[in-house]
Length: 230
DNA sequence: CCCTGATTCGC
DNA sequence: GCGAATCAGG
Image (tube, rainbow, N blue to C red; front, side):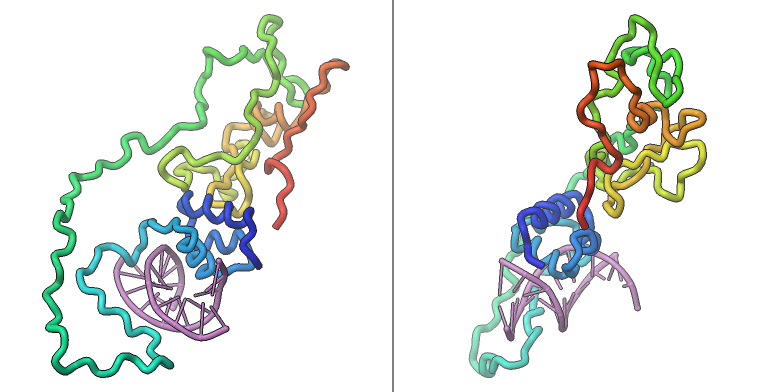
């Protein structure tokens, strides 16, 4: 495989998103973990917590790795450089004043409680899942938020309390968020609209109400945000 | 052992 | 530029 712009973009995104090289390689397909790492470095976007880079050692004699063909430098043993003492490394070890973990880690993205406030007052859920609203609550049935990829809150690439496949049951919304196989893929997890596999909100997406002729919504958002080639 | 990223080096 | 081989830490 070759590194097309798309693949590079994906690599970059996932890498910066915190996905491991293995995950990226698997997602991209046709490349090895090493290829991903190599490419990432060539792209100049390394810098990521490496398990093997805990501390920086002053001396790094680890050089004689592949000493096979090249007739290495001759025995420079004799009168040679006296090997000066380890040069003064990082002067300031930077005591790092306790980075203090992120203040609010858990972002209760799913406001499951009563949104009684700004949202339109939902009178009931009609057949087909469309929402019935009070006469004065006229509003677009579908909020301007298609089931696009859900970006992990902010810091953690992994979603703390995401609803995984294993967490699915009859009572929680199965609406997929993100793309399968990607680190942030999960399910809505809201309580379902009784009688439907999705929550009230997503029923509104899954079951498009047949609007009165005339005003028809053009884009029918599908789960998974559209077809995906793999 | 498994995993991880980093690095080297022949191609 | 690419990536397998290798290294090295968890």
